[in-house]
Image 1 (cartoon, rainbow, N blue to C red):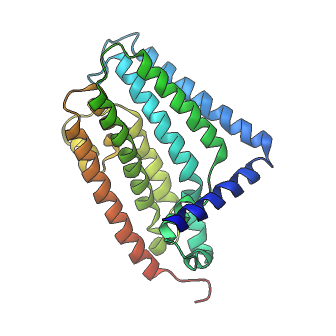
Image 2 (tube, one colour; image 1 turned 45 degrees about the horizontal axis):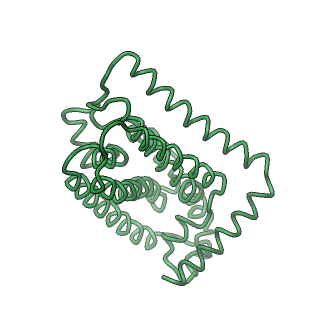
Image 3 (cartoon, one colour; image 1 turned 45 degrees about the vertical axis):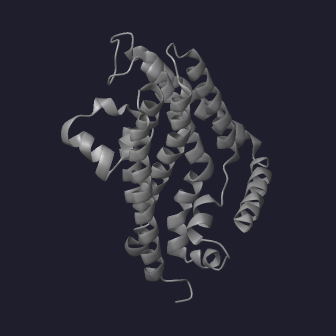
Length: 262
């Protein structure tokens, strides 16, 4: 574990130095994400001008949902997004060879080697919005629910990461996964809508087979609804299953990988 932390700390330091070399791009990206937060809050506020409930939640509950969405997205953009974008290129050009020689898990290193500093600042902004939404919530938020939320949100992030990577790993066989990756980002829109909007077979798919509806909605339910631990357990099972499937597919992909020297 210490070796992993040392290597990752070095990656973070390098990312900070590189980000400061392109300051205009750095602050533009911060501004764009901040604008996205404002637009999403305005979108939900506009909806509540016409209805008192959305997917079974009132406006205060949806504010917490939106704030959790911002935190999840900022963590994704900070840790995983750039790395997921470049992984297919590394596989197709044979650059993966250099990373397989490192004394750490290749899945870990290739998932987290590039730390997006501008998105880290947006993460601080998103956490501020979450604290504001929690403080403005008119109902009681028991300590048990707050603890459950603190466990549930990272589990939702783990599901989001695993699902994204599951759509990218087929590059080992297809030699081009941009289509699958782009398709995942289309599906990713389900994450940004309360799960109460979906019913019937679609809800079953989005909470089991392709559990995108769990990522932010179930942590929010664990916070604002009684008996939160059922939601946490559901998230834990989905996170463990999706990550186990990812590790299995990753190992098989490495066996199918044709290096630059082959």
